[in-house]
Image 1: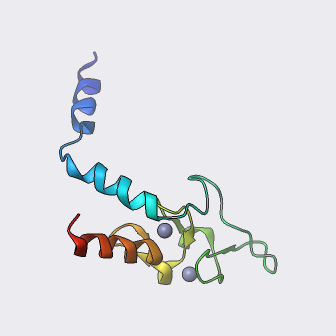
Image 2 (image 1 turned 45 degrees about the horizontal axis):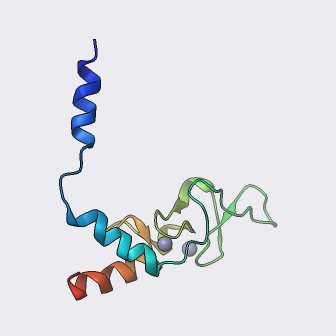
Length: 101
Ligand SMILES: [Zn+2]
Ligand SMILES: [Zn+2]
């Protein structure tokens, strides 16, 4: 009974060749602030909330998402769903797209 596993592996195979390269180029320009999986800072005033790494305002942890590029935790205001990164990295992605590389 390994059929499900084979199907899963097939799905994981990369389809586009240029996307990983573009990501690598981009990553060279982005300073990694946190490691992936590293938790956000706890707000010292409330203890039940966490700080957005971009605007430094406290939010419940459910409202913060970690940027896959720089590792910063962003609140709704500092997040770009379009790229699934923080606002700051989304800006860099846009510049890259404009360059067409
Ligand atoms: Zn924020
Ligand atoms: Zn980022």
